[in-house]
Image 1 (spheres, helix red, strand yellow):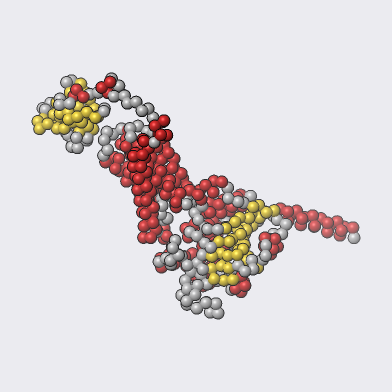
Image 2: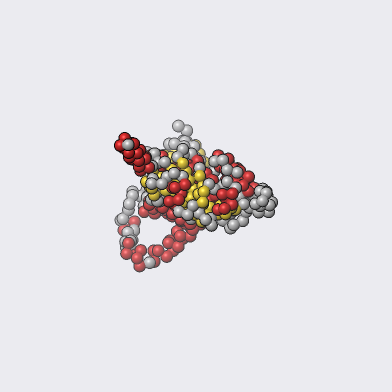
Length: 443
């Protein structure tokens, strides 16, 4: 008798230890599904895997959002071997239904709903068949993966799919909690988290609640279309200001920081790729060469600007099947609006800022003129009208010789071969501008 009591106590202790050892991670998929939510869900899954969690519960309450964000979240959930549970508390509409179907189990609170997953644009209008076909395949594959009815999953996207006893060919599938249980989409009905834990044998488990951290909040904020447009505008404002002024200053630094924030946040949410960032860096290098090394503004600077434009455009559009004319149009409008706003800002500042009282306190009002003896570089104005020889080919910059002395010169909108006789047209600061004389010096 005594041995039986000891055995019972021992088993109870082991059971208690086993229950306490269980660990459940708990995350929220709440509000609009955007690209800023994907890194958060990916982190929840990663931390759960790292800490050998027994299950992950996602409380779902959303009207949907971006399809590309939803597919990233779906991929992260399907990719884990940990038990995943969607706890639908109120609704899982549109992209929310795809995320819920990606979980191994679905628990729904009374009065909740799931479905209505037709892809629409920002105005609420139905997107093209290309989008609908993609969404149907995602819903079908996800339902099949977890043993749920694929016809009902597709019927949430396409009203033409008939589900006898549920919808005809004119209605989308949106299920209540009772209907979801009846048709095998949901597994259990629950009222709260404790009931979810009980129904899946997780009662007594340690609950690790994971909330969005400040970095994920910042990424979500920076990827807001309005904020990203402002970052692009500030970036272009800084670059244009540096092109129009000598050297490098505060506007260019601020512009680079804004563009770095834009590309960094876009890279985290998988909008910008490594290639996009590489194109931007190459464009920036070419632009810097044009500003600091190559006199004038030519093909190097133009190529740099084109690469920067292309990299920004590619970072605004998703890749894969979600890329269509509407998406491209929105990206073009967003990019164009940012550039126009940057030019307008420069014009406004150029016109009004010098006249403002605040600006006048930041600058030296007295002017130091060259005729008064103030110069920042040696003047070569004595060369104007003199003839010399092009020691190198001028494309348009190169080296020439005048009176036995070598000078750096720039051709005036022409290509001048080595050995040609040239004449100095004008001197602009440190730039000596020349043109070819119609005679060739024989060396």
